[in-house]
Length: 99
Image (cartoon, rainbow, N blue to C red):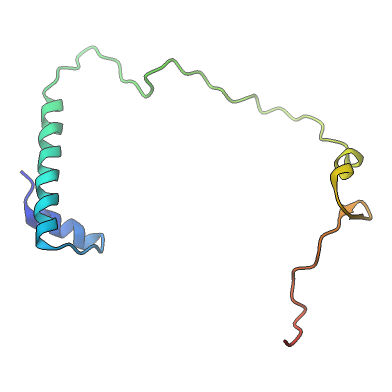
């Protein structure tokens, strides 16, 4: 059985503060959860294989293979402004000017 003092201790460790009513409520909820866990522990799972997914999932990722990149000329077709083969953007670094 979960006791209010245990809930207070965990709340203190988590740097949380609760009113007495909230502590009573959480204590009751946690006690019910622990009873459900105990009930699950009573189920005989002998011969039942552990599962991590309910469906038959297969690795859906592609193989990690090196492929040639998109040619620079093709990429630069969508750039609003370029200079010396690079994308030109507005400066965002303050040069130390006084305001």
